[in-house]
Structure formats: structure tokens, C-alpha cells
Length: 147
Image 1 (cartoon, rainbow, N blue to C red):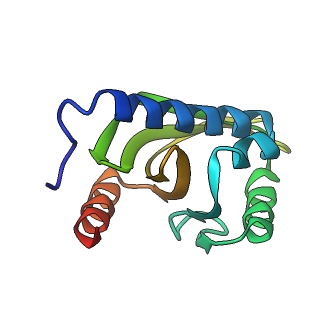
Image 2: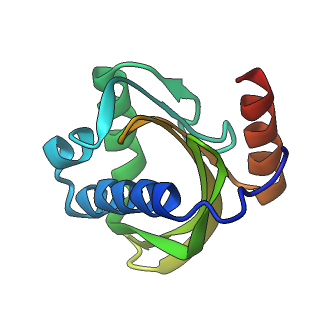
Image 3: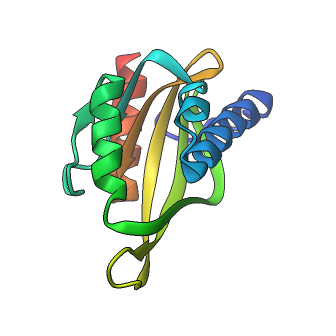
């Protein structure tokens, strides 16, 4: 298929709603709310070029990464850019940005990225964050081909 699913409608909207709920919980640092949107075997993977980037398969490792990731910022918030696209029946591609202010410097900044969100039923099974949109599309195509 290798591209957005046309006329995805209700399923895309449901996945986009769950992802929005997860990231709203992230912005509040409501970890119980965040994990309520995920499966028990949820995997978090970031671009390896991000500080501390890599793949985190258990909640302790994920929370360790998140604490390290958030530490330099007095404020760091997720913002969705545009409408997410359904790439396959259980894959959503969403562009987003981190909007941040340094804890020490107070300087603000914005970093745009793309996240591929894999679902199992109505829960997030995996998130894969990419600095380049083309890398996210390539990953999604490989995931779709792998079935």
C-alpha cells in the first residue's frame, strides 16, 4: 500500500483521539493517564540522535528516559501539527513538535518531528519518533509490509 489510507474515517479519528489523549496526559505529566492509553507491552522508541534516544520496552526504562528527556526544560509541551494520517489499519502517522523553554536559560525553542503510532485495538502499542518525516514514512512502509 505504501501511503495514507484513503477514506479511513472512523478508525483514523479514533486513533487520533487516543493519541491526543495520550499527549494531553504527557503535557500534564499525568503518567497514569498516559499509560491508560497504552498496551501493557507498550514500546517507546526515539530517534537515536535525540539525547538518550533509543528503544524502551518497559515502564521503568521509559520513565527513566522521560525524566532525563524532561530535566533540562522548565516547560516542554507536545503540539500536533496538522491532521494525522492513517497509514495502515493500525498505523497512524502524526507530525508534531516539542515546544520548550530551558530550565537554566529560559530560552524557548521548537523541534518538529514525526511519530508513527502503532495500535492494538483502541490502545497505543508502540510509538516511533523520527526527526525526518521521510524516515517515518519509510519505517511505516516497512511495518506495513511486515504485517
